Image: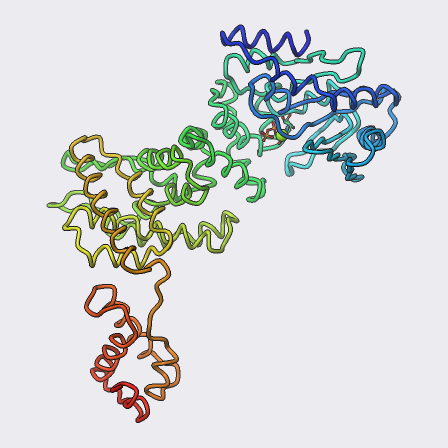
Length: 504
Ligand code: ATP
Ligand code: MG
């Protein structure tokens, strides 16, 4: 069968027709050039893996992977082909060679092609680094992770477009199934990263994980421990960036991987009831919030804030005979959990982490304001604390309203609208996003001839509170007068020069 026939079969199954120009991805000049160059060198070559899968699925095609086979077993045929091709393409082509891996990468205009010799791999139990030998195309396809990723198309001119599908990957593409080509227990045990990839593809493509494969995930979950955190987070972030990340998190939970990689999120799962009163399942609630922000094309970090917004709940959960289940201060407890989680997960410990922390800490505030009277001073305080992340905070909070009670949901959304209107109003009056305290520590130290000490912090905080609560206006003179008064209460006396300054 040719790739064109495979595409036709897929389209017939899906009862769809596609634009003929989408076949460009396979019938294009660069792929023909690769085949001709290989012919001249006496090498066989195939485009494989994700590129072939994505052509059939009509997904935007990315990097091209080419497997090269040398019939007379000359070493590193991938490098040989890449270099010959670069020469043939002339100016504009650039090759990087990785001798240790026997691979080469060619960049030509917007294309990126990876060349590798066909290989055969065997594993030992303690590492995901295989023992690699030269192999045939069949060997190479046998080491691939999923049937839908083990497809190949021949590029040599005589057989150009010939479609190779050893494990019925085309059928799995039609049925929307993720399955391993070999025994899934071996596939996952050999390289446990494939478990994360399995769930990532299921989420990105909205495919089902085949039953045996899903069972093997459960049996091999523990082996994820030999995989580096960087690789895990890479896959997790790809799951996070899909339109419905909940699909991936449900699979992570079902397979037993979630408690191993994100125990804080796994701990949200479950419902407890007392005296007939049950609290909601915070895991499913969290996934709903995450999907809500994802459906608005949120950034990766807003998605992380959504995923983590309630992680303080398990630790703050109490039963109260009159109030029922309570989660007091879960936002602050959750906020404190962000830094250790980011450190462990090898997520960036910079302003992106601070942003997630801030949103987790503040996520109850707009709700509390909307639930009560929406006063200027409450909204102003919120604006000061959220700063330039106020819009994202509001998006998170709106996504957080997952009540099934329509009336209740409507009331919250209406009050939120009120908060938003006040926010716009206040922003127009003052530039709160870039607010800073008009009284600095230096000024306090100068005024009272102080060395750095506790009182300075107390005074700055008092000034900040007074402005944020609209006790005094947001300007230096009012703040300075207020500071003098507060300092007096603390028993501080200004030195002479500053008394003069204060009275002008
Ligand atoms: P995408 O590029 O969209 O992430 P992909 O399938 O192209 O998806 P890559 O990581 O680019 O994934 O890998 C290219 C191909 O290499 C895969 O299609 C698969 O055949 C093979 N592959 C990648 N990683 C593994 C792995 N850990 N185990 C087995 N085969 C793998
Ligand atoms: Mg790829």
